[in-house]
Length: 182
Image (cartoon, rainbow, N blue to C red; front, side, top):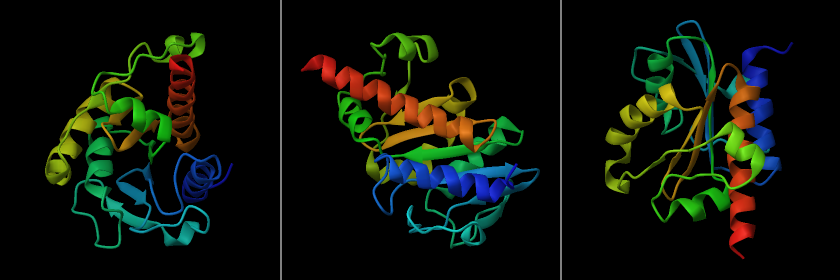
């Protein structure tokens, strides 16, 4: 089994390869005890390497090099109080469907089994840095994935593979819902 940093980078790259992020969007983190490894600000999904991840302490302010979403990741990890991973992706179908503001309820069979409801959280852009960390931490403590309206998916898992699964599955369900509306 690869180490946690290699695992995080692998799944972060897959989000890019499958069109869930553009070259420099999204972010991710993985916790090992009190250390949370977070993608650096401006990380490229095509070229990120494990040694570029930023070490953060779950209870301290993140270093400047960490993703601008680092406080959000740290809040989620603190709320879950166990090792795990958080991934953030910008799936276009999910973002488009979230603009209505309603919680996302998948229409396909598998989606309904996995996610009877994916909460959509509406936070104004100017309040994102202060309001998103506690709101998403609270929501992800109850749900494996949540959508920040107009921005994308945040998913947590026991490991990076599980967080990746939830990001990918929500976007796949959104794509099916989008096609069903046509």
